[in-house]
Image 1 (tube, rainbow, N blue to C red):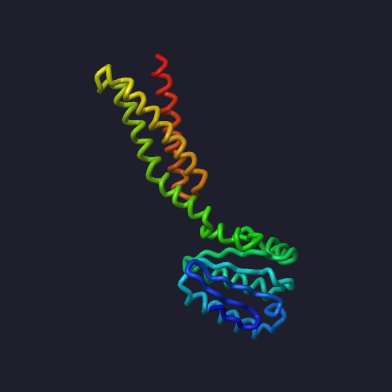
Image 2: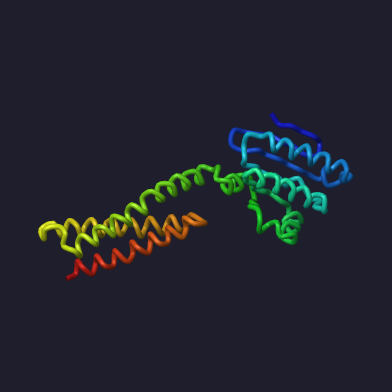
Length: 216
Protein backbone atom coordinates (compact mmCIF):
# COMPACT_ATOMS: atom_id res chain seq x y z
CA UNK A 1 0.00 0.00 0.00
CA UNK A 2 1.30 3.46 -0.86
CA UNK A 3 2.20 5.78 2.00
CA UNK A 4 1.46 9.46 1.33
CA UNK A 5 2.86 12.27 3.44
CA UNK A 6 1.69 15.16 1.25
CA UNK A 7 5.22 16.05 0.17
CA UNK A 8 6.30 12.59 -0.94
CA UNK A 9 4.89 9.17 -1.75
CA UNK A 10 6.37 5.80 -0.85
CA UNK A 11 5.27 2.41 -2.15
CA UNK A 12 6.95 -0.99 -2.16
CA UNK A 13 6.71 -4.10 -4.32
CA UNK A 14 8.50 -7.43 -4.05
CA UNK A 15 11.31 -6.18 -6.31
CA UNK A 16 11.74 -2.47 -5.64
CA UNK A 17 10.67 0.65 -3.75
CA UNK A 18 9.06 3.58 -5.57
CA UNK A 19 9.62 7.03 -4.06
CA UNK A 20 8.29 10.29 -5.47
CA UNK A 21 9.02 13.81 -4.30
CA UNK A 22 7.55 16.98 -5.76
CA UNK A 23 7.27 20.72 -5.42
CA UNK A 24 5.49 20.45 -2.06
CA UNK A 25 8.78 19.28 -0.60
CA UNK A 26 10.79 22.02 -2.34
CA UNK A 27 8.46 24.77 -1.11
CA UNK A 28 8.53 23.79 2.56
CA UNK A 29 10.68 25.25 5.32
CA UNK A 30 13.95 23.43 5.98
CA UNK A 31 13.02 22.17 9.48
CA UNK A 32 9.93 20.55 7.98
CA UNK A 33 11.86 19.26 4.97
CA UNK A 34 14.53 17.70 7.19
CA UNK A 35 11.91 16.02 9.34
CA UNK A 36 10.17 14.59 6.28
CA UNK A 37 13.52 13.49 4.83
CA UNK A 38 14.43 11.63 8.03
CA UNK A 39 11.05 9.91 7.93
CA UNK A 40 11.51 8.90 4.30
CA UNK A 41 15.03 7.57 4.84
CA UNK A 42 13.75 5.65 7.86
CA UNK A 43 11.20 3.93 5.64
CA UNK A 44 13.90 3.08 3.13
CA UNK A 45 15.95 1.44 5.88
CA UNK A 46 12.93 -0.64 6.89
CA UNK A 47 12.05 -1.73 3.35
CA UNK A 48 12.83 -5.27 2.23
CA UNK A 49 14.05 -4.30 -1.24
CA UNK A 50 17.45 -2.75 -1.94
CA UNK A 51 16.39 -1.37 -5.34
CA UNK A 52 14.88 2.13 -5.26
CA UNK A 53 13.19 4.12 -8.02
CA UNK A 54 13.21 7.87 -7.35
CA UNK A 55 10.48 9.60 -9.37
CA UNK A 56 11.14 13.29 -10.05
CA UNK A 57 8.42 13.81 -12.67
CA UNK A 58 6.39 16.16 -10.45
CA UNK A 59 9.41 18.22 -9.36
CA UNK A 60 9.83 21.55 -11.16
CA UNK A 61 11.40 23.61 -8.37
CA UNK A 62 14.91 22.25 -7.79
CA UNK A 63 16.51 24.20 -4.96
CA UNK A 64 19.34 23.37 -2.56
CA UNK A 65 16.97 21.50 -0.23
CA UNK A 66 15.93 19.18 -3.06
CA UNK A 67 19.56 18.53 -4.04
CA UNK A 68 20.38 17.82 -0.39
CA UNK A 69 17.44 15.42 -0.19
CA UNK A 70 18.51 13.54 -3.33
CA UNK A 71 22.10 13.26 -2.07
CA UNK A 72 21.05 12.02 1.36
CA UNK A 73 18.61 9.51 -0.12
CA UNK A 74 21.29 8.26 -2.51
CA UNK A 75 23.96 7.98 0.20
CA UNK A 76 21.62 6.16 2.57
CA UNK A 77 20.79 3.61 -0.13
CA UNK A 78 24.41 3.10 -1.20
CA UNK A 79 25.51 2.77 2.45
CA UNK A 80 23.27 -0.29 2.85
CA UNK A 81 24.40 -1.88 -0.41
CA UNK A 82 21.29 -0.79 -2.31
CA UNK A 83 20.84 0.61 -5.81
CA UNK A 84 19.13 3.84 -6.85
CA UNK A 85 17.76 4.88 -10.24
CA UNK A 86 16.34 8.37 -10.82
CA UNK A 87 13.79 8.82 -13.57
CA UNK A 88 11.62 11.40 -15.36
CA UNK A 89 13.37 14.59 -14.21
CA UNK A 90 12.15 17.76 -15.91
CA UNK A 91 14.63 19.85 -17.92
CA UNK A 92 15.48 22.18 -15.02
CA UNK A 93 15.95 19.30 -12.62
CA UNK A 94 18.15 17.44 -15.09
CA UNK A 95 20.32 20.54 -15.58
CA UNK A 96 20.70 20.89 -11.82
CA UNK A 97 21.74 17.25 -11.49
CA UNK A 98 24.31 17.79 -14.23
CA UNK A 99 25.69 20.99 -12.69
CA UNK A 100 26.08 19.33 -9.29
CA UNK A 101 27.77 16.29 -10.81
CA UNK A 102 25.08 13.91 -9.56
CA UNK A 103 24.18 12.81 -13.09
CA UNK A 104 27.59 11.10 -13.35
CA UNK A 105 27.20 9.28 -10.03
CA UNK A 106 23.70 7.86 -10.32
CA UNK A 107 21.58 6.34 -13.06
CA UNK A 108 19.11 8.83 -14.56
CA UNK A 109 16.45 7.54 -16.96
CA UNK A 110 13.63 9.03 -19.00
CA UNK A 111 10.93 6.71 -17.66
CA UNK A 112 10.23 4.01 -15.11
CA UNK A 113 10.84 1.19 -17.61
CA UNK A 114 14.36 2.40 -18.37
CA UNK A 115 15.00 2.91 -14.66
CA UNK A 116 13.97 -0.67 -13.91
CA UNK A 117 16.37 -1.83 -16.62
CA UNK A 118 19.16 0.21 -14.99
CA UNK A 119 18.44 -1.65 -11.75
CA UNK A 120 18.52 -5.01 -13.53
CA UNK A 121 14.83 -5.63 -12.90
CA UNK A 122 13.44 -5.54 -16.43
CA UNK A 123 12.93 -8.75 -18.39
CA UNK A 124 15.77 -7.89 -20.77
CA UNK A 125 18.14 -7.12 -17.90
CA UNK A 126 17.31 -10.39 -16.19
CA UNK A 127 17.98 -12.32 -19.41
CA UNK A 128 21.28 -10.49 -19.81
CA UNK A 129 22.27 -11.31 -16.23
CA UNK A 130 21.51 -15.02 -16.75
CA UNK A 131 23.44 -15.08 -20.01
CA UNK A 132 26.41 -13.38 -18.34
CA UNK A 133 26.41 -15.93 -15.52
CA UNK A 134 26.45 -18.70 -18.14
CA UNK A 135 29.34 -17.03 -19.92
CA UNK A 136 31.26 -16.84 -16.66
CA UNK A 137 31.20 -20.64 -16.56
CA UNK A 138 31.61 -21.40 -20.26
CA UNK A 139 34.38 -18.99 -21.22
CA UNK A 140 37.15 -20.16 -18.83
CA UNK A 141 36.29 -23.82 -19.47
CA UNK A 142 36.39 -23.27 -23.22
CA UNK A 143 39.70 -21.45 -22.99
CA UNK A 144 41.20 -24.24 -20.89
CA UNK A 145 39.92 -26.84 -23.37
CA UNK A 146 41.41 -24.87 -26.25
CA UNK A 147 44.84 -24.67 -24.62
CA UNK A 148 44.85 -28.37 -23.64
CA UNK A 149 43.81 -29.37 -27.15
CA UNK A 150 46.60 -27.26 -28.62
CA UNK A 151 49.19 -28.76 -26.29
CA UNK A 152 47.99 -32.29 -27.06
CA UNK A 153 48.19 -31.66 -30.79
CA UNK A 154 51.58 -29.98 -30.78
CA UNK A 155 53.12 -32.65 -28.55
CA UNK A 156 51.51 -35.42 -30.64
CA UNK A 157 50.10 -37.02 -27.50
CA UNK A 158 47.28 -38.64 -29.49
CA UNK A 159 47.80 -41.09 -32.39
CA UNK A 160 48.04 -39.51 -35.87
CA UNK A 161 44.63 -40.84 -36.89
CA UNK A 162 43.06 -38.89 -34.01
CA UNK A 163 44.77 -35.61 -34.87
CA UNK A 164 41.82 -34.28 -36.96
CA UNK A 165 39.46 -34.86 -34.02
CA UNK A 166 41.82 -33.06 -31.67
CA UNK A 167 42.08 -30.22 -34.16
CA UNK A 168 38.31 -29.96 -34.45
CA UNK A 169 37.94 -29.79 -30.66
CA UNK A 170 40.69 -27.20 -30.59
CA UNK A 171 38.99 -24.96 -33.15
CA UNK A 172 35.58 -25.30 -31.52
CA UNK A 173 36.97 -24.62 -28.04
CA UNK A 174 38.97 -21.64 -29.22
CA UNK A 175 35.96 -20.17 -31.01
CA UNK A 176 33.78 -20.50 -27.91
CA UNK A 177 36.52 -19.05 -25.73
CA UNK A 178 37.13 -16.04 -27.94
CA UNK A 179 33.46 -15.29 -28.58
CA UNK A 180 32.24 -16.00 -25.07
CA UNK A 181 35.08 -14.09 -23.45
CA UNK A 182 34.51 -11.06 -25.65
CA UNK A 183 30.76 -10.95 -24.97
CA UNK A 184 31.32 -11.32 -21.24
CA UNK A 185 33.94 -8.56 -21.28
CA UNK A 186 31.53 -6.19 -23.03
CA UNK A 187 28.73 -6.88 -20.55
CA UNK A 188 30.74 -6.96 -17.35
CA UNK A 189 32.78 -4.45 -15.36
CA UNK A 190 35.44 -4.77 -12.69
CA UNK A 191 37.79 -7.69 -12.20
CA UNK A 192 35.80 -10.17 -14.28
CA UNK A 193 36.02 -7.83 -17.28
CA UNK A 194 39.82 -8.17 -17.29
CA UNK A 195 39.54 -11.95 -16.90
CA UNK A 196 37.11 -12.08 -19.82
CA UNK A 197 39.50 -10.10 -21.99
CA UNK A 198 42.27 -12.57 -21.13
CA UNK A 199 40.01 -15.51 -21.97
CA UNK A 200 39.05 -13.89 -25.25
CA UNK A 201 42.67 -13.17 -26.18
CA UNK A 202 43.66 -16.76 -25.34
CA UNK A 203 40.85 -18.08 -27.52
CA UNK A 204 41.78 -15.86 -30.48
CA UNK A 205 45.49 -16.78 -30.31
CA UNK A 206 44.67 -20.46 -30.00
CA UNK A 207 42.20 -20.26 -32.88
CA UNK A 208 44.79 -18.64 -35.15
CA UNK A 209 47.33 -21.31 -34.19
CA UNK A 210 44.80 -24.03 -34.96
CA UNK A 211 44.05 -22.56 -38.38
CA UNK A 212 47.80 -22.46 -39.07
CA UNK A 213 48.20 -26.09 -38.05
CA UNK A 214 45.24 -27.13 -40.16
CA UNK A 215 46.70 -25.50 -43.26
CA UNK A 216 49.97 -27.42 -42.92
